[in-house]
Length: 235
Image 1: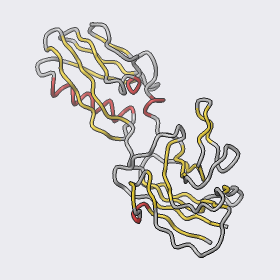
Image 2: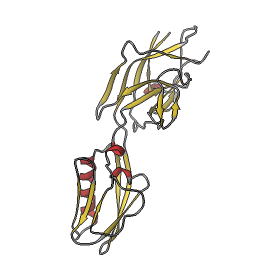
Image 3: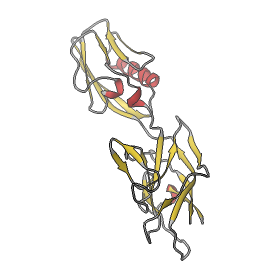
Image 4: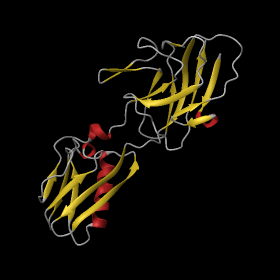
């Protein structure tokens, strides 16, 4: 039996993790397989703040609005933000092709303090930099800003490290994964499962009424209120 699930029709929860009401025929199903999925790319990969403390201008907090940034778009955002808060000072922000950020000022010395979640997103170590007229990141920001290659469609009705799609992440196994859907940069992922992909086994006498989506490390995907849907095959 094929059936379509949409987070829009949830009876509880949100688009990242929800429960649906079921009206399945009075029969036993043992397997579930993803057939198609439509997932909007509306999640964020960066938010937070950085504090730039200048020897002339003092401390200025720059708030990073939640969004799905690339290195060029984050570079542009920060340059505009610094210009607006450091009035009378001359700052420039640049990035190399390999994702290294450099902050410079021709009018004052400064240090940068990153919010705990933001240092790696600029390629810096956590904490506060030393005071200087130039600050260059030690490693690339690409890995921190890169959108995860897959979104996992999961259900609590399946279980087992040898069942469904197994996600190996930092020596841990993520269970409950029905299938991993490749992501794209923008728009909506329109995914069709290849015919050779195997089904996942259901827990005995448990119907799939709970569905949720995560990245491959298990972090919930926050679609910022947007809905996703999928078609499954029960057998």
